[in-house]
Length: 407
Image 1 (cartoon, helix red, strand yellow):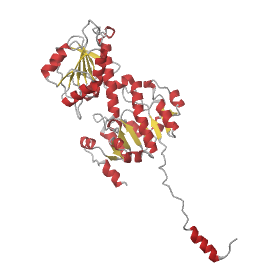
Image 2 (spheres, rainbow, N blue to C red; image 1 turned 45 degrees about the vertical axis):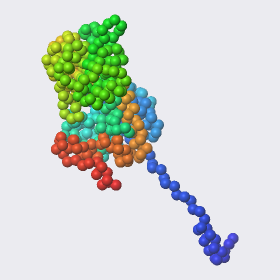
Image 3 (cartoon, helix red, strand yellow; image 1 turned 45 degrees about the horizontal axis):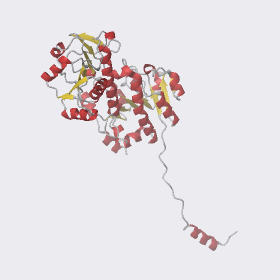
Image 4 (cartoon, rainbow, N blue to C red; image 1 turned 90 degrees about the vertical axis):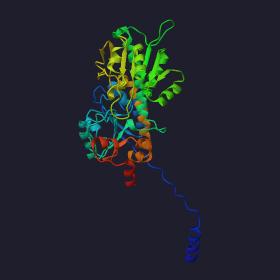
């Protein structure tokens, strides 16, 4: 054993020159999310935010998911399927709304907001036309971070939920029209499409957006003759290119439109307005001049409708006849095919939630993901939506400024 102080000092000096262990940066700790899926209580809302398969994926990655009993009933998912996927089935609604992260389809009602203790994250739709000011103020008072899924963007700048629901609505609208044309639905007994030797069904589509494009695709696929009207030449040009076949297109000119409607068997109304009411481009006189037994499907009815004769109907009583023309004016067509729509929503929400967990939670995800951040309209109780601020005369702050102030 070395006891000489000079030798010990020399060895210590030599040791200080040896290579040291490199301190590597510790990877960011994953956040375990505590997710609540409530049962939808909005009128005729049958969709659910997460399918059992998505729940299984989240639970396998360490997240905790609570599902209110019968949440998936409208989409034909049983409590047993959710339970086997690893979800906790809850019979108390208040328990669901106590979770840190609540994911639902429809906007929250005033009663649902009352059940929230505060300082949570809510992901749901934002329907400005029906969003009560009081509900908004209660969310702000409880320091909720609220995210509108219809304003979340993907990597390419597209609103994925809006586009997916538009695809479903466009295809389903044409299927509904085909059903209403059949004699078993008191229709004219026409087949939507065409066969050799028989004149094909004439379909007019108003709007060249996502809904209009998918309605056009479906009609062409069935062999129908299609005419598409829109006031945007760029949308009409894009539709031509995306469909990959020549189809009759026109800007909305009253005389040209009226002539097309007189020959139409089916008209799909798929016009949208950025804000406010959908433009009403089909007058009552135009409807009167249409063939008896023809079908109007107004997908735009949730924004007021693009037919002067339209009025809101329900899934239980979906049609009415005016001037001999069958009108289908049910908002939220996607709920008619709730299982398909629920899978589509789940396919969008589950990667978002997985990424949120990987980044350590909602706050970090909002900071680092621009597309998700674009859907935030309340951040920790502060209103960040300029539109909502102006509509309800409330103070608002740009979220970028809030995030900079909190760094």
